[in-house]
Image (cartoon, rainbow, N blue to C red; front, side, top):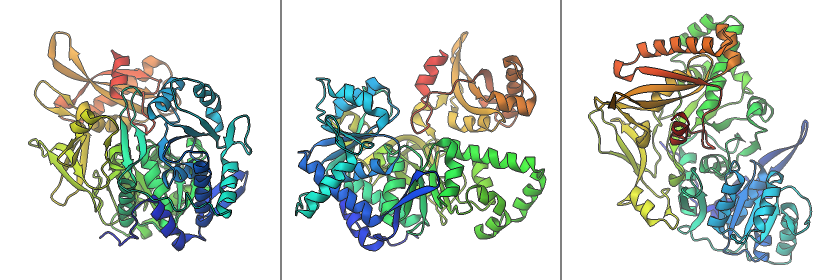
Amino acid sequence: MAKDMLKVTDLKDMLNKTRELYGDKPGYKIKIGKGQYKTYTHNEIRDMINYLGTALISLGLKGKRIGVIGENRYEWELAYLSVVCGVGIVVPMDKSLPANELEEVIERSEVEAIFYSKKYEEIIKKIKYSEKNKLKHLISMDIDIHDEGIYSEKELIEKGRELFEAGNREYIDAKINPEEMRIMLFTSGTTSKSKVVALSHKNLVTNVMDIASVLDIDSSDRGLSFLPLHHVYECTVGMLVSLYIGAERAFCDGIRHIIENLNEYKITYAAFVPAIYESMYKNIRRMIEKEGKLEETGKRMQEYKDKSMEEKKKAFQEIHDMFGGNIKLFISGAAALDKEVIKTFRNLGINLYQAYGLTETSPVIGIETNEHSRVGSIGIALPHVKAKVEDVDEEGIGELAVKGPSVMLGYFQNEEATKEVMKDGWFYTGDLAKIDEDGYIFICGRKKSVIVLKNGKNIFPEEMENLVNKIEGVKESFIFGKQQTDDKDNIKIHVKIVFDREIMKEAYKVETDEEIYKVLADKIKEVNRIMPKYKAIRGIMISEEPLIKTTTNKIKRQANLALIK
């Protein structure tokens, strides 16, 4: 059963109501030097948002579009929240975009001001002088004082404080229409083709209330921000949920520091993508192997299989201690997680749950919980979300469609694209899924990426990639269909494998590409033995070059296919 949650109508309402509940609790823990931290309470966070918003309005930005770009940090969050809660429309921008695409986003979004971190200063300054955009104000997250036409975010907060204390209530009293577009999100893909998802306050707060109502987290918890904040997954599940429940939030120092950060901040919950959990799984396995305890641990896991999570945690305390010893919940999103990884984590007493959603749904559609978890599923749909599958085949698989208040307003200024995905209030996700008799949703793969064989059978590349990725020494893989030269209708399954030379050397004592190819070809034969004949992998390519992916680690199938061809 979902918990009863505090009802909020919009993000401003959320910040105001939760201030009363959690004002004195720590909201951010920020590293300011080695072993030195600064803590901001929820009261201080809300004050900074209000002061910054007041200053932005004083710059003439009321009702304007304002961009935010940079690494995950509290200044990014203050910028986003101050804009959205009473100034205008916020446009979070992908920090990994090349300069030309960033310029295009700035032009298309018609932002008049942009918050940015030091790394983007040079390119943002150049873009400002282009005639093609409306950019007037540059706001740095890093400088302390106004400098050569560039505003300091810190100084604007101070300016806003002075205005507020002098009686300026324009921002504080700003009315929010929860149904209007207030967030513009560019989907991944080249910017000229990328669509702009229009989201409202209502979209986001209904998703936040739903997530908080089903997850076992509250104001005593500490979250770690790692995934890019411009993406709605981290923005909603990380930033907004933390503020709503009054939790503490810390910012990760980078992918190599995840384990270290989980320890130093005593993190209790975090959201990552499958690659991170798969890497953790391999590290756990290596550690156990090194200690010569693989067989013993396997037996112990079997013995504790039906015990409570608390009992499992005590039995495998040394593994919990790797992650700081405080983890209550790990959430995985953005792609399917290997079932073996899920089972192992849960058997060790670590709650690892799959979530699923899209930018267009603000984003979460379904998430596993303590009450609703079934390995391989994404749990059941959230309380305010209805889900169904359409055009179902004989295996019960069809396109997943969802309906609810967290579904986007539409694609901004793109009626044609909106009509393609919205039908009678239902949003068609483009993902194939099946829903069992208990309402558990199982995602099978992208409709567009399914490979249809000559015999009419469907191959889901994601499912097969999971099997290949389990091979020791494989970093990632890409399954694709290849037409046969003598028979265009006959498609054979091929795989491109990205390998780790160091691990190949350590695990198989091989060094040359020829030797590595031979080992991996033998391993693929083993994979083929556990699959139906029609799914067998008939060709292999090996490489050390990483696959082309989106910023949330999803494989860009067309781009990778183009490289192969």
